[in-house]
Image 1 (cartoon, rainbow, N blue to C red):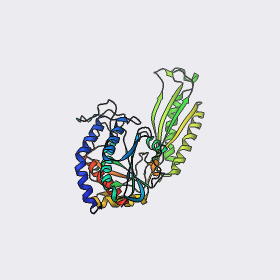
Image 2 (tube, one colour):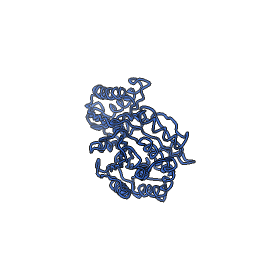
Image 3 (cartoon, rainbow, N blue to C red):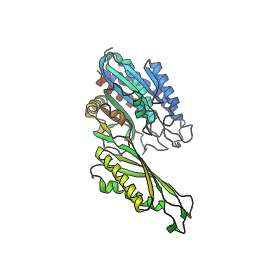
Image 4 (cartoon, one colour):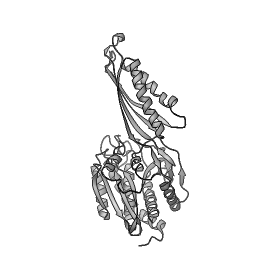
Length: 391
């Protein structure tokens, strides 16, 4: 089989698959599963790959699925990756296919991603005889907790990969539009847990106690100087304390306070500066306030860096297929564990517009309603990129 007109062929097949893919998406949306619980979703993926005749294995990184499409001639290996996990959010869309599980929802569109890759897999399986190389299909769990990609890589998912493509739906872009960022596109994400211990006592006699709440309040304000006074102004950095927990009632000074937070950076140097500064501030602020302190600082994922060797041909394919609907965007301080694959092979993360007309939507929102037309468009984009890169 020779691909004489890839644009027409891919467009026609994506249109034929659209209704089924939307049905699959709605089924997955109705039954969301959190990180490393994606047993039902992985089962759907495996069943679909079996129906297509695509060899695969399950249980990769606990609940991931890895499929392989062999081309008709030798060539490089291209990985296409989609994430599958939902979020611990109670859905408030009121849709007929809304989540049936209280406190769980596909509020980030990973249900969209899963079926988009399944659609591309079906098209690419049919075109495989004309492809030079192989395609690895990565259906990844646990992106929301930044653990799925490392877990799949530990099980061999990145072995032999020469280049990788990831993607994400974007409600801030209208459906039909695509986007990209050169270089660092998403931030490194690190986490810290800080415990400050003092001496409990009666609120009326603070001199007889050592107050960890006052010390923690000082520390929170000091942590803001990591960005304002320690980082280069051109090196973006975010330090956010997301949890401040301590005390039980009005008139007791507690024994301990716990802080949890996140650090986001785009540059490796900024990442090092932030960690060193936070550790120093914890040590010295606690000492000044007569407290004992412990800090657990964990580096989660690196910044996601788009490699021009993959970005340029991928964007050229999208433009050749859709026209001038591809725009260069700005980096985000959000994080993506697809960065773990990008550390092992040249990679590119495509932005796919999913904004529905008349809606001002956002990810991780209990009322998130992406425009489902983005599924067939994403299928076309991934298929055309793969065909062009492996032709």
